[in-house]
Image (cartoon, rainbow, N blue to C red; front, side, top):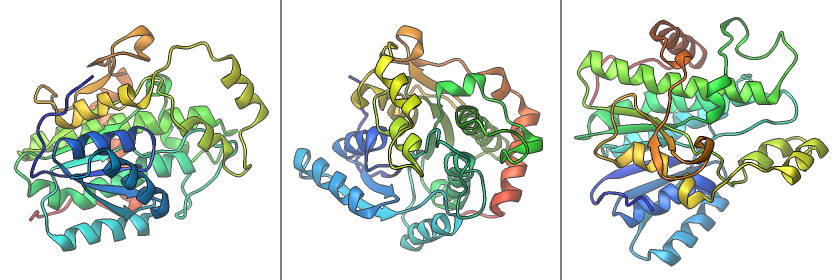
Length: 310
């Protein structure tokens, strides 16, 4: 099991910290001494997760705050609350996401749900928190991508899936490729501007969480019959959240993680096993495409790089 380095005195924000890899990351960071803000959409679920972690680690410092990454006003409110506190932010773990809703759905701002929740929301959050991140001595932003990024395509002419027949899986793959492109572009910007910020990416392989079933249930109350059938005959190797959270924890805390680095399971098919360096699809190595997507995200969200930092 990966041992998180000592984090005493550091402040971390983990999105989607009420379950799955986010909850496990919050638990391990808190156990290592970090002060952890559990950023969740449903506060009651966050408080239950906090209580479970405290039962294991009574001295842990955990705070639950609400954020809905599918609502840019909620993202702004969350960021403003942290900025008002004035505490430098050492770690931002962009973990939360939604996967493969059965039909095309939209966010509060009218974006396709997966692009909005998995990419545009985290993009806006990252930029809004940059002043706090850059006030920390060695800040990191670790963003969760997915193995599906390998076959993802960013369709600049139809990012929102308004013109094509909607594919839940391909829309998910686009959003997770966009996350990897965000990781790479932020690393390039940090290098250009001389920031001491490390931008890294990770993917969990095939980790057993509620991500697959929760997304497939949206708007229906239960997963589709096809989804249930696929789950029943699934023969791929899988792992629990203890292992699945480790690439993200490595990206966020390990001294050997590098700017623009990408980490995932190193075992069978890249789906399970100890953390290793993951292959980055060539589409995320296209600097011009990464810069174009960044500019498009600024336009869509209305959030841009700060002119000055605290």
